[in-house]
Length: 157
Image (cartoon, rainbow, N blue to C red; front, side, top):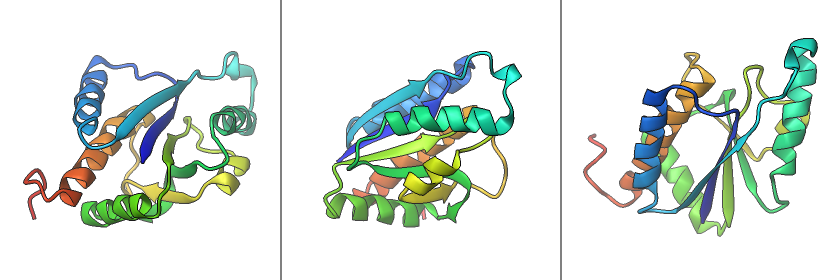
């Protein structure tokens, strides 16, 4: 199973880049992983929030294959424990899904078209995190999920 992390915009802060690199390197021991960054919309100051979401949504949808499983990291998604998330990852693998795309939208979230195309929505917390911070938090949880699946001691229960 391949996993792709689809992001709007680049990661800015050095400490976040360092955390992302750490977990991306660790993930390579468990799965085929890639990251794709979609450039932010240029001249967006003249656009409404809805127009920005629509344009970003078009870019997200262009980067998906018909067979991709799209999972949105979204505040309206289901909240899972780390163990429950690991179970989902394992089930996706057993179902024979070839590629799962986990997507983080822009500052205003996802367009209706992206919500309609999605297969699942996961919320990392009831708290709000910056779209930059979510990247590290999610990758750590994805790495944790694989260590739980493999029965490794990283996750303490």
